[in-house]
Length: 194
Image (cartoon, rainbow, N blue to C red; front, side, top):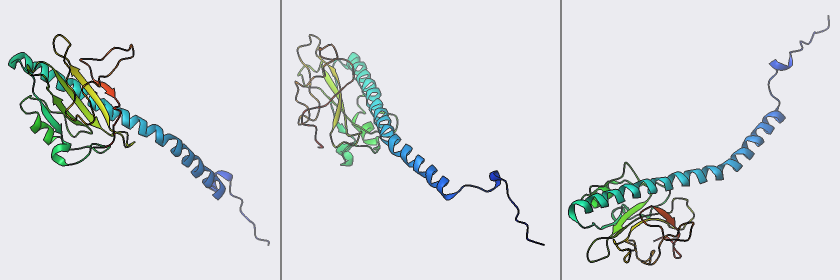
């Protein structure tokens, strides 16, 4: 009797090597196209941190002013204490809590940005709160500012890092007017790493 070869149905045989290679190639193509989009979404979420924290910091400044009749300055933290440059990695915010203890402000958890607040006028009735960071990893420092000018609008303060931010550098809105009392992202002309 001749050996009978058992024929197995197609669904029980498994995948061929060619089919597996095609599946791996498709996954690789999808990954290479999706990765830049993922990085963009991550950078946007990091920027959202700065807008939230600057709004909260400005609110704390204004609440302090309502009680004490002046604003408070604070150094750029946490990089000043940690001796690091703000980037894509999160930094411990303990230095921020210590720097802003008089103001009563601190962020929730680790941060991607450095934060400072600067009071430049002798009367102490204007301030600028600023967030700095290279959160998109492009080697350029991004800056988000919250400017609260003097009551008559004649005096504005620069940020705490004057090398990155001349006093006259004010965010301009879509309608061409300066943006005050709201966090606004700007790209200073000399925004290299500091």
